[in-house]
Image 1 (cartoon, rainbow, N blue to C red):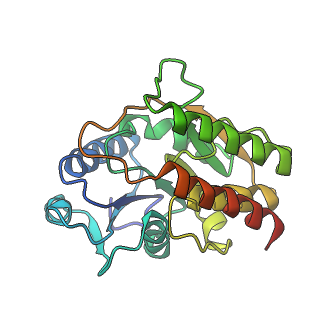
Image 2 (cartoon, helix red, strand yellow; image 1 turned 90 degrees about the horizontal axis):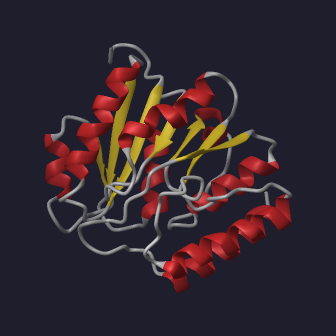
Length: 232
């Protein structure tokens, strides 16, 4: 299967997730094998200080190792540059996303119903956000995007999404942190790419702490949305 050009490229950014990354990779492989499509899995280790890199290397996938900690956005951009698939999927490495739902995100693109499919935590009514501040912050950013673009997105900050490779290859992306999701979305909407949301299950991480700082990263996301809308 791997002798052909991969139809799907899975990009997984990792920073200190040694207890979850192995399981995520394993489940991603199983989900993709069931779809019977050629694929590749790219793990981008963002200079982890734990055993994340060692665990990833043992998983027999392509691993890109950064020499210094750069941030989620930089790690994703590194993965995008190496991805060879027609469809690129991003999924978090902390186990909060369900790899078994990959077909739900990929199928609308295979059917040419969308150019970008976002896994929405808000469309699944069973999901419970333990951090209310994060939930309110996401809803505020959703509103800002709607005001600017006229498009209603229920979960603009979701890191679980599938995109046509042409969207990424033809878009100038500069984000180094969590703001990359907003930059990609705004620029895709401006260029007329079709978006679709699918409900996904979401679990709060069971190991470690979130690296996202609600205030610092929230302000960075806010400014990125504005500058992405105004700029090129």
